[in-house]
View 1 (cartoon, rainbow, N blue to C red):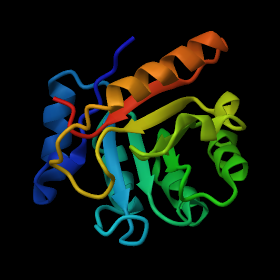
View 2 (cartoon, rainbow, N blue to C red):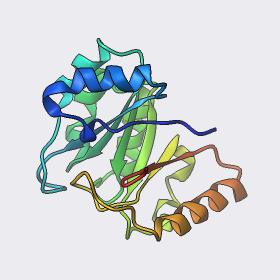
View 3 (cartoon, rainbow, N blue to C red):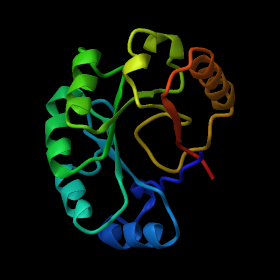
View 4 (cartoon, one colour):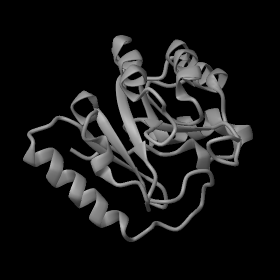
Amino acid sequence: MILIAPSLLSSDFARVEEAAKIAEDAGADLLHVDIMDGHFVPNLTFGHQLVQALKAKTKLPLDVHLMVTPPCNFIPAFLDAGADWISIHLEASVHLHKDIALIKERQRRAGIALNPATPIHLMNDIIRELDYVLILSVNPGWGGQKFIESSYAKINQLHNWIKGQSLKADIEVDGGVS
């Protein structure tokens, strides 16, 4: 099944609520909210307050992509704010199993995000715990980048791995998708 999750990073930040409504009316399945802390990536974006405000304004599930370090300091606030899906970067988490367990304990979908140059085999010890894997097809931190063509091979490799092991993790792709 293919789901469409428009990124609010592409919206006019002064009109995020309107952008969410447009996406909902257009048939989006969920809203992707990129959270950047200025440390893991050089840019700053939204906080948990925006997620809380959006939760009250849309019926769509909120897919929160945490580009932050350390994610354990941010996960509880985004869970409390109403995030339905939370992905954290394998590269940013010191205690990956603990962070994923924290998300799943609250009955939310837990995912791992992978930078373009991060090999998928690094998820070997956690993939069975995941609801989804977020493949970044651009380098994290800035919107408007061009899709990295080698992402197709990585997506195919991940698909074959998940299928070959009869795992249940979905695949999400983020960046430069049109």
